[in-house]
View 1: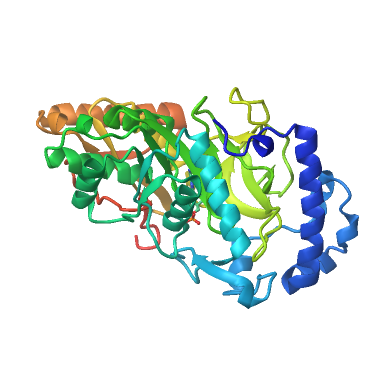
View 2: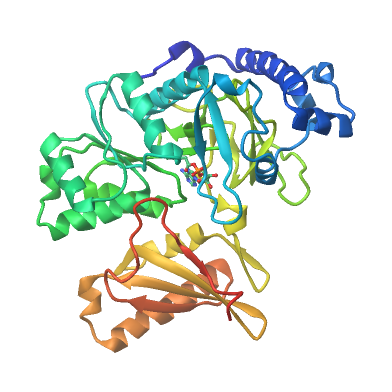
Length: 434
Ligand code: DLL
């Protein structure tokens, strides 16, 4: 099933023509309406009329998260403030948060892209969507909410928190779709089991999980636990919120990025050079239709690659590979680069371990060290210490073998690692404290 058959199956040449038309309009708009961009264009000696083909995109300046911070809160708006009907903001763990504005049309574009994403995931208007993404400045809750309503499905706006009650509501309402972070879904599962709720008594069919990196191994675990099909959804507040890209139910391989609204590039994060399709690098997105706060060549810091191969589902929009993680979260352990997701994959393939883990970075004699704390299941926990030590040693060896880094592994008791209601905190960086 497709939501917008014409757009989603537009032949590539027509799609690219549309992108170019939208890009040219956008470039002119930001040049005349956003002083920040006019200044950047001037520095690079580029004028809007020089953008003649999509290839000319490479002449345009990048936009970075820091640019949003420098223009905090409303400095990048391309429309008069009175046309902005909503703002969202990122949590901003360091420094100021980044703010994004939406016009009425932006809100309806977003809702229709979310509805499109739902349909790609196999959701219909007959579904009951349990929406446990947080409502508020975070885009997850409201983004999913408006999309569900645009589709005509029933949305249960539970937001995050109150986990026991959530399980009860899911059961009582017969919810068929669960939307939350993958880590929160595991918490919901655990809570359901602890409450003695039979998972089979839930009516869930589909899970739409995103907002944080997760692995194929994690997907299989969640699908098995809930007996559902789990789909990966991607988005970021600076660009829109959820609904920038999603896997289709047909293949569950790679996330279709809605290219009539987003122009994508993959660059080498070190040099900024554009990489050919298929190569892994940093995803850069240009918003083609955003009115309130369009962004040109926004450096997402997310690491992925473009899959330029047509998908079996018939959609012509390219897919991106499951996100590996953010370049900021990449660990460099004695010169070796590792993403937390690579460690997660190994943990989840190890018998007796659970998907609850944390990576603790410390500095010892000026060298970075990594300790992996991972919970074992109840069964393993009751085993002898010797048995636990064996698992630890085996893990250290496997990680060394596959990822090339030396780590310490500490198996911890079930339910000792803090559960999150939104994005899981996987990395604890103590390097500046040791
Ligand atoms: O997390 C928007 C969202 C809400 C997406 C609900 C999906 C579902 P931010 O809080 O601005 O927005 O965080 C965006 O989260 O740059 C990625 O690093 C990460 N991220 C989002 N989705 C995924 C995903 C929302 N499916 C940042 N896989 C992004 C991996 C993801 N990382």
